[in-house]
Image (tube, rainbow, N blue to C red; front, side):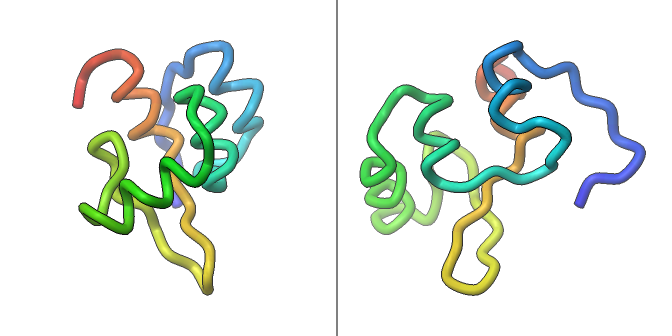
Length: 76
Protein backbone atom coordinates (compact mmCIF):
# COMPACT_ATOMS: atom_id res chain seq x y z
CA UNK A 1 0.00 0.00 0.00
CA UNK A 2 1.03 3.58 -0.48
CA UNK A 3 1.91 5.06 2.88
CA UNK A 4 2.64 8.75 3.36
CA UNK A 5 1.71 9.35 -0.27
CA UNK A 6 -0.73 12.19 -0.85
CA UNK A 7 -2.74 12.12 -4.06
CA UNK A 8 -5.19 14.79 -5.14
CA UNK A 9 -8.20 12.72 -6.21
CA UNK A 10 -10.97 13.78 -8.57
CA UNK A 11 -14.23 14.11 -6.58
CA UNK A 12 -15.95 11.07 -8.14
CA UNK A 13 -12.97 8.82 -7.52
CA UNK A 14 -12.62 10.14 -3.99
CA UNK A 15 -16.25 9.26 -3.24
CA UNK A 16 -15.77 5.71 -4.52
CA UNK A 17 -12.37 5.05 -2.94
CA UNK A 18 -12.95 6.64 0.43
CA UNK A 19 -9.63 6.31 2.27
CA UNK A 20 -8.49 3.13 0.49
CA UNK A 21 -5.40 2.78 -1.73
CA UNK A 22 -6.93 0.01 -3.88
CA UNK A 23 -10.41 -0.44 -5.34
CA UNK A 24 -12.21 -3.47 -6.77
CA UNK A 25 -12.91 -4.17 -10.43
CA UNK A 26 -16.60 -3.08 -10.27
CA UNK A 27 -15.51 0.18 -8.65
CA UNK A 28 -12.83 0.68 -11.33
CA UNK A 29 -15.49 0.10 -13.99
CA UNK A 30 -17.74 2.67 -12.35
CA UNK A 31 -14.95 5.26 -12.45
CA UNK A 32 -14.43 4.72 -16.21
CA UNK A 33 -18.18 4.35 -16.86
CA UNK A 34 -17.91 0.87 -18.40
CA UNK A 35 -19.15 -2.59 -17.43
CA UNK A 36 -16.94 -4.51 -15.00
CA UNK A 37 -16.72 -7.29 -17.59
CA UNK A 38 -15.04 -4.81 -19.97
CA UNK A 39 -12.32 -4.17 -17.40
CA UNK A 40 -11.87 -7.92 -16.82
CA UNK A 41 -11.69 -8.59 -20.58
CA UNK A 42 -9.07 -5.87 -21.12
CA UNK A 43 -7.03 -7.34 -18.28
CA UNK A 44 -7.42 -10.85 -19.69
CA UNK A 45 -6.28 -9.81 -23.17
CA UNK A 46 -3.45 -7.42 -22.32
CA UNK A 47 -2.59 -7.78 -18.63
CA UNK A 48 -3.84 -4.27 -17.94
CA UNK A 49 -6.89 -2.07 -18.35
CA UNK A 50 -6.64 1.54 -19.48
CA UNK A 51 -2.87 1.41 -18.94
CA UNK A 52 -3.18 0.31 -15.31
CA UNK A 53 -1.93 -3.05 -14.04
CA UNK A 54 -3.86 -4.43 -11.07
CA UNK A 55 -2.61 -6.10 -7.92
CA UNK A 56 -3.96 -9.63 -7.70
CA UNK A 57 -4.91 -10.75 -4.19
CA UNK A 58 -6.51 -14.17 -4.06
CA UNK A 59 -8.99 -14.31 -6.92
CA UNK A 60 -9.57 -10.55 -6.89
CA UNK A 61 -8.06 -7.79 -8.99
CA UNK A 62 -7.45 -4.61 -7.02
CA UNK A 63 -6.63 -1.36 -8.80
CA UNK A 64 -4.42 1.47 -7.52
CA UNK A 65 -6.38 4.63 -6.77
CA UNK A 66 -3.26 6.76 -7.35
CA UNK A 67 -2.72 5.30 -10.83
CA UNK A 68 -6.40 5.77 -11.70
CA UNK A 69 -6.22 9.41 -10.57
CA UNK A 70 -3.12 9.92 -12.73
CA UNK A 71 -4.90 8.35 -15.70
CA UNK A 72 -7.95 10.55 -15.23
CA UNK A 73 -5.68 13.61 -15.17
CA UNK A 74 -3.95 12.39 -18.34
CA UNK A 75 -0.56 11.70 -16.73
CA UNK A 76 -0.29 8.04 -17.81
